[in-house]
Image (cartoon, rainbow, N blue to C red; front, top):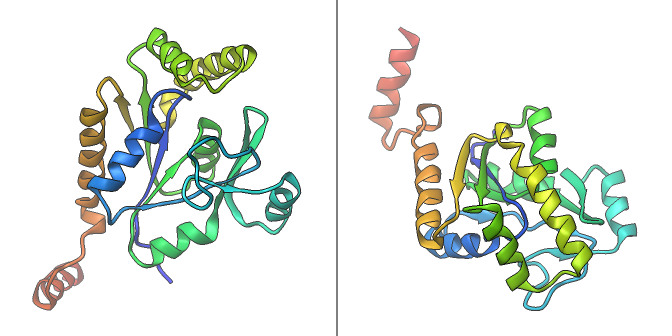
Length: 209
């Protein structure tokens, strides 16, 4: 079956505010589907199984790799994360758009595969602000905090992988900009679906003449 739904890839350094923006996006675009990743890390306070992630063991994760169940997977901050291929394809076959939250490693994997998707990167206003947000989150040890900052700097240098760049200075504005990107991509001519048979016939005849 032809896959018609659009896949949107959203990446951001840890602490940029991606999770909060995605929660706001869900409220504004309820028809947009969100791919729930599998991870080997433990759930944080407030996270829900099947909503934020599917939390599985390292052994089960490796079995899924062996069965080819992941569109992509990567090891980030000592834990594995993977995107279920079947889930993404299921939505695309129903002409439903899907947003996948991915780290830069995962985005690069899909780029190297020439995977058809819209790649979006979210930046913090500054490195200083990124550090402040991570400190405020207070979920990492001192060593982990330093590691996340350094990884974030490396990720920011990979902007060339992406089609769109957002700066998350204001959550509301960032969400609006993300919605604008999604709506604009839906208007691409190659994705146009004639709303009536007569328009469809007219366009088909134009192509054939």
